[in-house]
Image 1 (cartoon, rainbow, N blue to C red):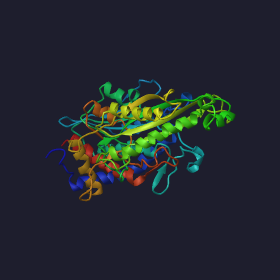
Image 2: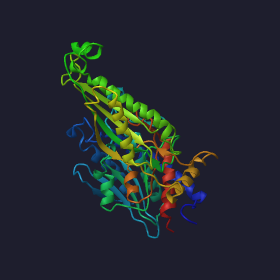
Image 3: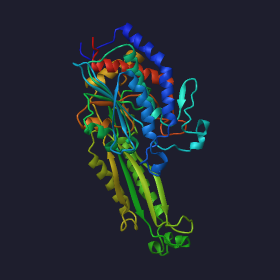
Length: 446
């Protein structure tokens, strides 16, 4: 039988699951140790590098110390010397396909840290059914599930034919693949396929996501004409001096935001993909800063800066997306007497292309079979796979022709939010599925 149709004998599957259960308490404690480490990405806007540097390395060292107990060698790569990537490698006995399970160590900064359980985003508070803490879902939990699966195979003396890598990387949260996953691929840490252990919770837990949205980070700069706030009446009322009296960049920026929202509404009808629910492809105005150069209400704002995150469909030319947004803003500017002569400046800061692996690809079929073996088959008439409603490092693999998908424990709905958490049962279920996929993809050596 091929690897895609291979099913574990029931007695072996039961032994693997029992071993995962037996190893879980210690693996959970390792996860708690990792979550207790502040591993905020030092390149995140507003973060002082000196305040957080070393956290990714410390969390990765805890992880590597655990995984190397189970037949894995350790190699590191650090384009930034203070931010190493950890590559755990278990060589196969030959004759099988190789597999990478990849996850990132860095996190976003915590929002409203005083509101977290225990008053601390890194408390790693444990309840009967879940673990709280920044990074528990996104995505140290996925790394631990992968380690737990590999540990169970080792403890049972099960050897794989193909090589197995687990990559614990940096840089993902700010899209710096050149410091993390893409740097590893460039250095030759490749395989025949890759699973990115991101939390895949849409439309339900442990969904299989062989496709993602693409994204742009866009900043729009809007110029005003800052003057004394007492000029407002003359600047906007009939018979006044108009733009010569002053132009409030707050309000001109609002016109730009409204134009983007109008385009977003159109996208709800025109941008469709069967892997995604309606309304996924969005233009989110994530921040809006405006002032006169002085943080005071005594002025009409002289400038505004709008930060926008654009999510666009896979298989759509990113340049076409840019052109559509630019045309929308340009059209809105032509309708305004000030913006017509002082058009907004669009600064395209980054583009993270979508990834897509065909649903019929062997890797995808392998995960579908293994998920069904643990959680039961998908009900008739429903999709077996779904879109990943974010960006992730799978893009770097597919850009190099390596099939990849996202699949892992956790809830995207609580990622980046107060009281981020992961359900313990999902950590175990994910480990059971990973273990089956490691065997089914790499092959089991006799």
